[in-house]
Image (tube, rainbow, N blue to C red; front, top):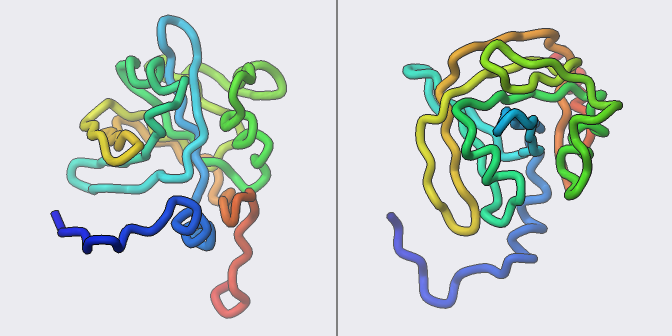
Length: 171
């Protein structure tokens, strides 16, 4: 743990503006909780380890979806494709029936909802949780993987969803 310099912590608004210039991938985390499908959008998804295969995401402690999602015995990470901005927005919206049409999904091998049209699915077992600041770090061990298409990913940048365009020199 590093020491914080006295009087050097930045304000939340200034910090949020600085982080907005960083583009991140977009996933929807889904689970089945008490027979009810639950899910939320996350832009904090990351790979953690190859051995064992671990991934992570953060969820705000004030999330109303987290208590149900956190109680599930497994969850799915749905890696969104570039044409799924509306899906990401729906799963980020409070009070929405996220699994009603036009959301297209099917039950996964262990029961977690798998969204259709995504780039990939990762079915995960809970591995570790930690409270970090105003969020909860969730680490899952990947039990199953399905890659569907490797097209362009959905990105989140400056408060908006967008698409990746490769630099001409790297095509």
